[in-house]
Every structure is written in structure tokens, then in C-alpha cells.
Image 1 (cartoon, rainbow, N blue to C red):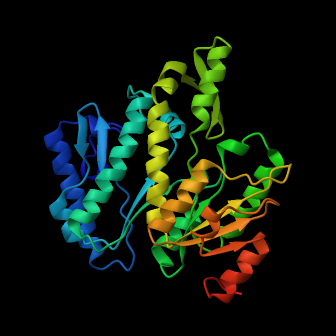
Image 2 (spheres, rainbow, N blue to C red):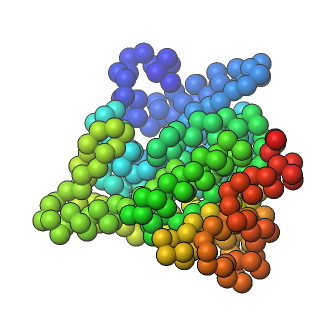
Length: 322
């Protein structure tokens, strides 16, 4: 769009009057639609909505999106702390964490509505950018390796936050599955620690929460973090179920606690039940000495004793290469 308006300084295009912004956007999309007729592969990187000084407004027009006739919609999302950091670095616009977390939800819903409003038969996916490692490979496989099976990875998170040995087992599970499938990993967007950090900061009489975000130290306003606790919880709940719904199967890893009991959280149990009720294939890797309950065995397609056994099974089923 900046090519259409060389008089607008970088980073300022959203500040122009709405009428001109709409005209510039339509002109840019007209060029994109022309290129799409001859380009073998085309990725359009755009928001569905903007929440800016003008308020909330659309970033695309339905008539042009119908002409573009895309094959897939992917809504890329990120953690609220990372969004905050990028806005500080790239745009001098006033915002709160509440603004960002609400906008993120608006983006997901708007992208899905756009997709289904244009053509309800084409797929829509929600994909996190990645907390520790970027999900570039997942994006690539979604676009170019559509025959690869999609798997939601389920594992305890908050309940084992201070158990380093258990967390290492979980990381091994995640790193083993990621190359084999198109994996939707809830750990790629993890925010449940923020309210905990806020409570700890309040106990220390601080008015901020200090975090490492995108490799740099950032201070978040304590009141703003407390203000979004309900949003974090409700969005995590809804988003994880959305990721299950867009998958072919769920693979749940239930590690063993030091005393041999199963480290299965209420969140994992609820995810397994949701996947079962959504008619997904349900696989559980149960490494604990404690036997799984009937609520696990009766809803699971298969229960494995270890990670290697599950991979061997997926090879035999033809889900992955040998």
C-alpha cells in the first residue's frame, strides 16, 4: 500500500483518513488479484481487522476477497506480551493489554467469518507464531503438505510448571511429534503464567510484571495484567478446543510424577473428552505407573505405554513414513 502512496511516511498509513485508506487498500488488492491469475503460489499477508485510532475497522473487502478466491485462510496469532513489545518497537500508538487481547480474538473471529462468508468449503486454521520456536514448518506443511495428518498435542502445563524432569519429558514428546504431523501445540502460545507472575509482583509491592519478551526485558503494567486474567482463561479454553476441532486427531502425553502417579490435569481430561465427542481419533501416551482410569480407556482410540510405541503404531498405520 505504501507503493500506492509514496507521500505517506513508513508506519503512518493507518493514520490517514478512512476514505483514502479504503481507496489505497482496494488499489493494492486489485494488483494482488491480477498477480494471482498467473502466480503459481501466492500468499497474501494481511489483517482481517484493525483496531487503531479510528476504532475497529475492516482490513479487506468481501467483493475483492471473492475475486481472489483463495484456497485457505490462516489466522496467525501471538502472545499478548509479544504483541505489546512489537507495537512499542514499531508503532507509537497508545494501547493497553486489554486492547490487544480483545483485538486478537476479533482477528480470529473475523478471519473465520470472512473465510466462511466467501466459501464455507475452504479450510480455516488458527496458528500461533510460537513461543520458543517459530511455527514456520507447521505453516509450510499446512500450505504445501495438506495430505499430512493434523494433530493436536495435549499435555499438562500449569500443574507441572515447577517440575523440570517432567517438563523435559513433555518437551521430548513435543519435539518428537512435530516433524511427523502438522502439529497444533498449545504451548506455542502460553499466557497462563501471567496472572501468577502478577500475584507474585503484588506480594513484592511492585506495580509492574517483568518478563523476557522477544529476547528483551519488558515491564508490563501490573493493573493491566490483572485486568486480562479472565480474558486469558476464557481465550485459552476456547482456543484449545478450536485447535482440536481443526485437527484430525489428538495425541495426549501423560507423564509420571515422581511418586508414580499420573500427571493428568483437568485440562487434559477435558481436551480428551472434547476430542472424543468431536469424533476425532484419540491417542494417549500414558507413562505413569498408575493405571489410566476408565474415562481415559473408554474414550481413547489407543493407549500407549511410551513414546516409541506410539511412533511405531503411527508408522504401521501409514500416518507417517518409516
